[in-house]
Amino acid sequence: MSARSIRTAALAAGAALLLAACGGGGDGGGETPAGDTGAGGDAAAEFDLVEEGTLTACSEVPYPPFEVEDGSKPSGYGGFDIDLLQAIADNLGLDLKVADVSFDALQSGTTLVAGQCDVGASAITITDERKANLDFTDPYYDSLQSLLVPADSDIKGIDDLAGKNVAVQQGTTGQAYAEENAPEAKLSAFPGDGEMWPALQAGQVDAILQDLPVNVEHAKADENYVIVEEFDTGEQYGFALAKGEKPELLEAINTELQNLRDDGTYQEIYDSYFAADGS
Image 1: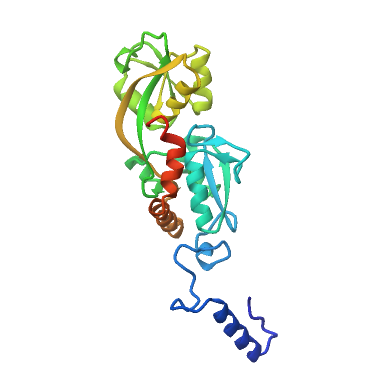
Image 2 (image 1 turned 90 degrees about the vertical axis):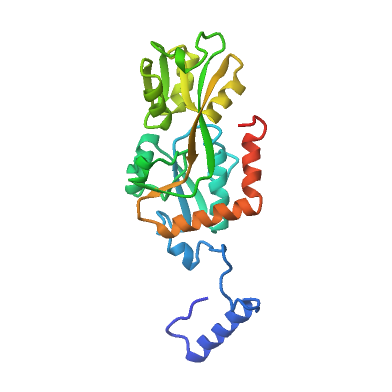
């Protein structure tokens, strides 16, 4: 309820008293509880969102199990990253909107700096190089790299990749790992998993080197493909924001990440995607 200039001083005072009474009393004096930052509240206004009342996330889709199209979800998208961000948006009293963008433009910071979205949610590994252009939230997922090949392939590990056509996603840590550890392989950089997986199925490449959970999804979906090696690269994912531009939003997301861990919601979301396959 807002006071208007045409109201009398007495009415304004009465409205103030009424609002105080509706606050439910207690020691809080009508203050907004910690974590309860509705879209119309002062805290949400401080986030400098692309669209008022909405948290806009940029993501490269599909990248199962992290990002997938899902018409049953409020944003039209699901996956571990999106479900987690949806829970964060809900706690902040915001709607969630997802924009499908190129991963390379997202991880470089270009999309965020251009103001296309508030946050990047696309299985983005936190690296020192990316920190030069991006602010990262606290880590929310530990990941491995892996090598996926046809079940009848003579490739048994990374040492067998010399002369082989290996698909990697452009701009990713998987590409960097392949360049460093399989220098004699013929690397083909694709925009995303949506192009790599069909290429492997069509026999256009001999293997895919990328994040383990994504390759696990393919091996589960088609028994003609197997993961022959996993690589512990010590990677962690974080949500990304434009460098130095949204400190209040960064702090709020970190707070809600911790709240979701504390109340068990994070574990519920995690288990719904990873508990069955142990990844």
